[in-house]
Length: 297
Image 1 (spheres, helix red, strand yellow):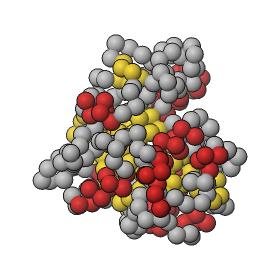
Image 2: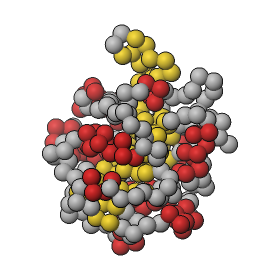
Image 3: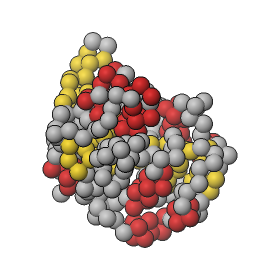
């Protein structure tokens, strides 16, 4: 686990609540990566914030319901921006923010989602993004790995940090095509709960690949399928060697399947023969082939 005081260092800043996204973007940011955390509801908001603080993000902004309350030990390190998810599309909001964040590496994720990258227990997010920049890469491919509670009788919403499990098998990829053209070094990835319970998941939401970490620049646009309008951003590696990939370990699908009345009535457990307890470390994810260090050792 990254030491909190060490990872934040001099970049630690006072908390602020902002009236809207424009007000947040009008203030100077600390040097280094930005984490945009989309708090769709109140599930595991504190643990989500705490996890990304430990990774060393010097800038963390939570787009959240206006009445969200966070733990006192977190409050002084988080920027809060009210966001109505029923009215405002989060992808449109992210696209409004990207030009103003030009030059910063940006991570985006939802509550009850936890970013992991190779050696994230001992290396900060700043170290990772500096290394990737030296490789002349502007993006890092991430896979959304579904987490789920072991016992849905005890955790009816499918969420449990203590008994979290993931699938150790069942992942696969297809070549990506766009407008009749195969996209070089791009794949559509599938697996996890989206694959096992695909009858409850719309087709356009079944992919697990996401460009969750990227270098913001003017003209860059995020599409609703988690890809960008600049195709090189969507590649899993450069032309000359393999690159670092990362994982976003996420309860989001489990929570959705257990709160939607149609699917909740048909699902009484998520565990199966290929379930494995999640150990909350990057080494397990690399061992399972769910992310790789590339040239980073």
